[in-house]
Amino acid sequence: MGYHFFKEGQAKLESGTFTAEYFLSGANGPWAPQFKAMLDDPDGMIALCATKVSSDDGRDRFKLDPAQTFEVWDEFADKASSYYGFGSEGLQKKLAQNREELANKIRKARADKDDSVNTRELEVEREDNARAIEVIREQRSRLKEILADHKSMLEGWLNFNETEIVAHFGTDDRLEGFQRDGVNRQKVGTYVESLRGQIDTIESDRSKKLKGWKKEVSDMWSSLEGQVNSLAVADQAERAMLPLERTFAPSNSNLAIINRIIPWFDVIVGSLLILGLFSRFASLLGAGFLLSVLATQPFWVPGSDPTYLYMIEFAALLVIFATCAGRNFGLDYFIHTFLNRKKYKLNAEAGA
Image 1 (cartoon, helix red, strand yellow):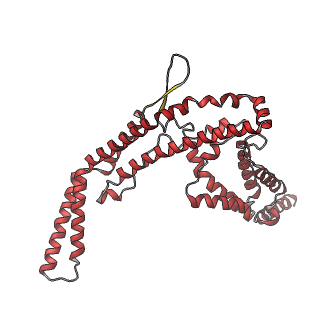
Image 2 (tube, helix red, strand yellow; image 1 turned 30 degrees about the vertical axis):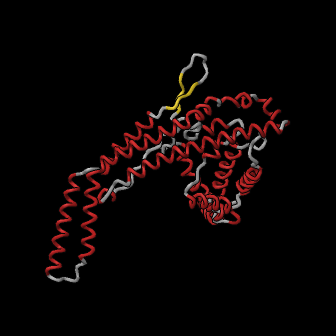
Image 3 (cartoon, one colour; image 1 turned 180 degrees about the vertical axis):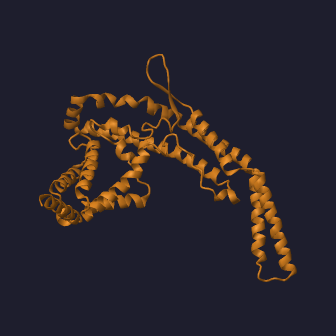
């Protein structure tokens, strides 16, 4: 059990791309709404700039409006300009002075015929400084161009996909009746395999389409972030990269916290179980985690993923907890022995 937890956590850390998004988005059963509420922008409306508009017939209508996204991008551009000091006259003067100093060193080395000075490297450095000065002079205008290009790119993408995206959100209720239909849903899902398969296929297709759209939009955000940060040169480039906070995936969201915790949780619980250290505590934590997994995909609910193995591991962890296995085959033996001796000594002293 410990090895399984440890290897799972190690694989997540090494990949660096672990996310609980797909697992939570596929949550099934009675607790599905609670688990899906942990997701960032689960329906994709924020990423795809979709907003509801009122209509006379009472039905939900949607339109695509990138205004809020553009506000975030404008704020990021202003922040980057201030953060890096784009167009800084002070930095230009510093680089110009450095070029002059390098020129003096080159002239002196050549006049003195000093072979210890690599004049070629100094010339390359002077050229780099000259290029950096030119870049700094154009940084603000380049920033405006990059921002305008990405706004145009997003607007064009939204216009091209608008009909399909609006239809996607406008038909979001096509499965709701079936999903809300409690007892009948169970009967249909159990006895009419073809219909259940059809529903699963529709849901899968919709999910894949939404993920594809969100990735394309996310790539635009990443492109803007990368190009703006790449404008930094010389001393500016020594600063840490300025992140562009995604409105549809904030860095301090529940999902982001879960993604950071779970890999280390698996490694720590696995290590404790392997060593038999605080094994009751570790097994209880592991059992609680597996219980949450079972809650997202209860195997007794039609359409859920098979989670029987998780159930077996959950039961095994409860056995470890109940039998205090670490006290017999792990480091808990030494801790338990030390505490018992101390307790026995205190009792003996009290009796005396």
